[in-house]
Image 1 (cartoon, rainbow, N blue to C red):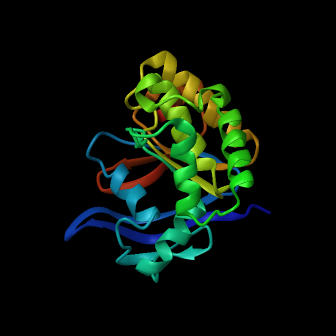
Image 2: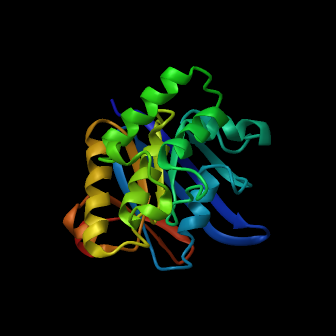
Image 3: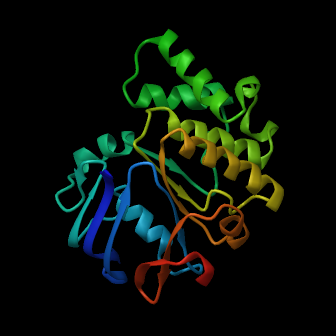
Length: 227
């Protein structure tokens, strides 16, 4: 039986008082790779922000990685985010420290104490994204694609149950986008659930998978050929 990792029922998404999306009912199961598509301004980022607790869920019911979004308290959010890996379009790496120290910073911030274990963990996640030899480099010394690989490695640090990738290839050229996509596909094949917001239709055609669309203030599943 499929295990639900994200379930929303009659959810409305608000940015402050503005209704962005309405009447969302959907389910994402463990191990799935799901795209979230839609034009710029269609509500993809607001939808993602609701999932990781940046926007409160005011209407409808929702659960994500065993957290109830409706009753989510401010103090719960760090614990929710430890069970989620979040990948942003603009990498969000700290420019004043090298790749290894970017990852160590996150481990320390999420409660890791054992230095040897932390070192092993950073090596493990960098190895998964093909960046094991680049740990000593600073973000400005590596390409955009490599920075995004590091951002994906960072998202894997706490062994998340679900990875939320918000336009992870948005700032990359087509070739680099494919390379980053291959990394995400590989992570998914090893059992991680991924929800990826994108407007890169070429990638969706190349790597078809379940697709949700934001359009007309709704989110609904689309059949691949209709994309």
